[in-house]
Length: 146
Ligand SMILES: [Zn+2]
Ligand SMILES: [Zn+2]
Image (tube, rainbow, N blue to C red; front, top):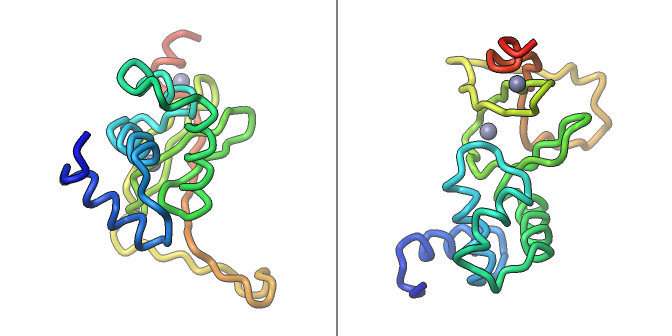
C-alpha cells in the first residue's frame, strides 16, 4: 500500500492531530474498522483484515484499538455482558443495542438535542468529553426467534 494513498494521507492527518505516529499497521486496523459499519469486536476486525494482511497479529489489533480509544480517535463501546465493540464513526450519535444478540445500530441525535448534566452531581473539575445514550432492547430478529 503506497504511502501516497489518499486514505493514508487523511489517516496521517488524523494521527498528527492526536500526536500519534501513523504506522502502516495502525492504518490497516483503522481502515478496516472504518469500513465495517457494524461496530465490530477486536476479533471481528482481526478476522476481516487477516487474509490480506497476515503481518498484523491479533495482539497488535487489540493493542492498536486500545491506543486509538485512549486517544479518542475511535469509540469503545462497553456494554454489560458483552465483549467490547469499536466504532470509528465519531460524529455525535447514539446506539440501539439488542440485549440478546449484542447487535448495535447507530441512531442520530435529535435535532437541537441538548443535555444538561445536573452540575451538582459532577465532581469539581470534571470535563465532559462525550455523550452517548444507549437504548437497550430486543431487535426484530431476536423477537421473531423467541
Ligand atoms: Zn438481537
Ligand atoms: Zn456507532
